[in-house]
Length: 108
Image (tube, rainbow, N blue to C red; front, side, top):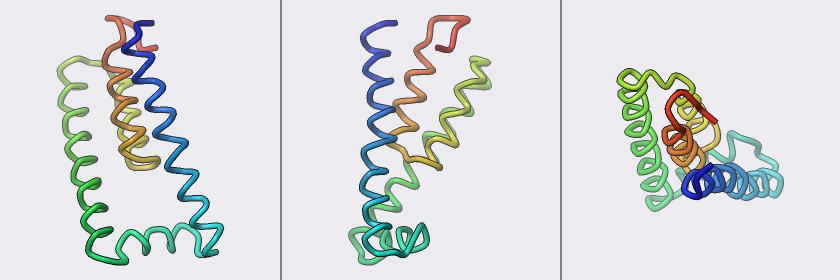
């Protein structure tokens, strides 16, 4: 595996774990669960702007993934879409780059 692919994989793992630590901490401290976490994203103009910024970037990434999957037939790369919306853009983007840079005929 190339050094670049290792960096993408490390970033995908970091992007899955590190933000989740903060999300779980918030939910544990407030006792509000996922609904309270989502409400916190819209508590003021700054957090609302950031939430929309990430949402728009996640949609743009998803469109790019679908377009490239259709052209390249790299179907496994579609897993980056649920990773993006289920975990976060910080996981989905490097995961997609990791999958996209696999040698031809291989996905991992």
